[in-house]
Length: 364
Figure (cartoon, rainbow, N blue to C red):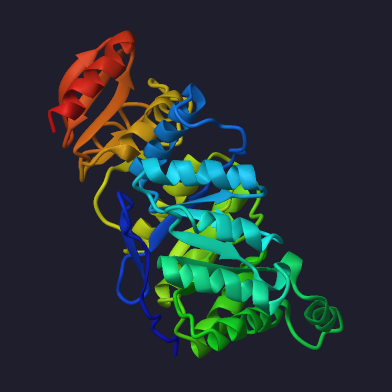
């Protein structure tokens, strides 16, 4: 029997949106910023562009956004960003606990640390005490690639599985929090193996009611990463394991968010928003499905509409197979057909297709 996680709060200060993790709350979607932020000056064009991209990622369905903070300059930039966005931000800290202390001076919603790699218990205590004062949560991150040496040796000797090593490493980190009576934390145990990801999170959830951040680390390029994440997440989420998820892809953050949202949707844990159905395209192709999807996917996924959109390549898969869609588009000869609930509403030229589709979409 898996334990029901207790609830912790992320954000909720200033203009930052409040996110509750654990209990019966919705599964929160996370992604990570892919570029360094060092050197980005507040109120510069680069800063403005960064804020716009954050807003776009949030509109796609991202609930929590994480940034790497490798130096003090990055910490200062992140604190500026946190003043200007509503999405809760996470500072990802390794080795230097002073970076965490600096970020805690700003409106940072969560600190991601591994207490084992920031040094002494006193340093962990300094971070925890300040996080408590600021009402900031902490995520303890454990990866298979950075297990403590003694646990790694036990794995190599075959005395424990790597998944068991992840759980034991997490337990060690939690001991410090127990000593400090700090409960506003999330645990993540990530492996690049689906089986190890599932096993470690199941073993942990059987013993503890701590909220879990689940993910397959270094999952790979988009196809392999989507497959691994789907297999691991669907298995765990259907068992009630996991309070927040991040799909790790060697791809854009937008694709991580869209993938996470689709996994939750197919697990029955996400409703509303635009659902896109599209055919794979074949030799009957009368409409360039791939180009249309590439142009429209992010915009459609960002819409606050509870609709289904069908993008079909020919009349075989057009209004017929897309008849349950609220709106759809397909090709027939030299024309493009736009249909609603299987009924053709407009026939236009390929050059007019995007404009006509937008007009019909806006009318819904």
